[in-house]
Image 1 (cartoon, rainbow, N blue to C red):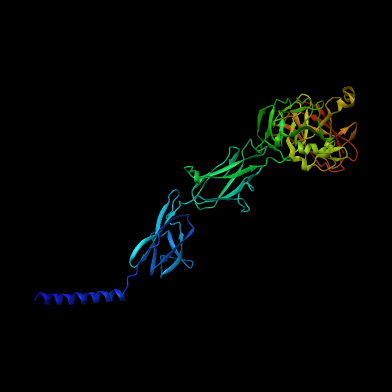
Image 2 (cartoon, rainbow, N blue to C red):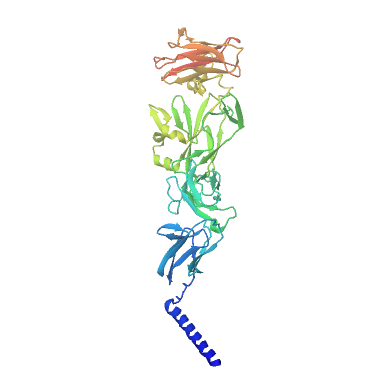
Length: 502
């Protein structure tokens, strides 16, 4: 019985061996070898490649939405392939990225139901990015700096991918907001700050975030070429200033007829490149026009500290209304005149000089000084622009004038050979209750010009006034119009006005 059992057992073992041997021959097991995992670091927007050799069919997947696979230019969630050598591409996107924070994700490969990492990718932190361009869209660089202007704001465009602020050197005045939003075009404007307009300067604009991170800080050059050599800037509007007769005060009458008085001297600020300028004092009268004064003829002075600060003083006026002008020329202009300063500044009509139109921008102060009330009983003007009166007694002597007119208060006024709408004679010490009458008869002859009319009026401070109408070109016909001015209240002669036309 044991042998039979042993024989049957032997048959069973042989059959079993045959079965297992047949399976091994028909279905050989394939050995799966996974590629070695690699690691790499990429910036947002960069692509990478992975090469591997697969022994069977495979599938690739990514662990994050910011790490995507690329198949023939298209972004896909997973890739499939067959056995063999392959190279696949991936793209690093910016989804969920932040400044200063790196992220990791992996690409896995699956073969025969088994998954292993094929590649680990580190996404570098979101980078701070700034672009700055000029008005023409050209990038601001060392070769193309942000250039400020003398008389207006200059602007640049700033684009950044973060909220930023702009800091400027102390010599730059920021004329826009200095805070910009992320991913929004921002216009930044600036100009040279007060006190820094004269000369050239340079520095950098700093663009950074609120915490001043080093990686968020960018610098861009800003320059200023300085005030052009032929330009000049004054601290005051130069027109329509007046000085009192004693020179102790100056003022300007506003549109309401009111005036604020300031104690002399009058301070003027002058801005010129490198403080290179020349000051001229000019007198204007109705006979010769404009004349440059010297140290012997000047009745006013513009004292200069050579650093852009002028102090204007005016001597006491002992005669009629007079007119003065302070002209400040950049040396680049003045030196170009050579010996012909008058011809460069003035236009001449015969002997009469007037400031050239292109030279008017260099007038720092244009003013009149009131007449001395003790010396001149009246003043004459055309809508506030005074005429210069010349004392006849100064020309021929007091005794001669008294013999001719019976008084020394005789004044000569020259008018241009043109039409005048209205000329006004204002009396310093005669009020509206003392009527003043003009009389053009002299030595039995009426000296009035054709078409002349007189009108009595008074000023805002109730001083008597006589308006003259009708003076035209050629009115004089070579004669003088002698006007006796008579105070009807006191029955006395105030003076004579001799009008000449040239």
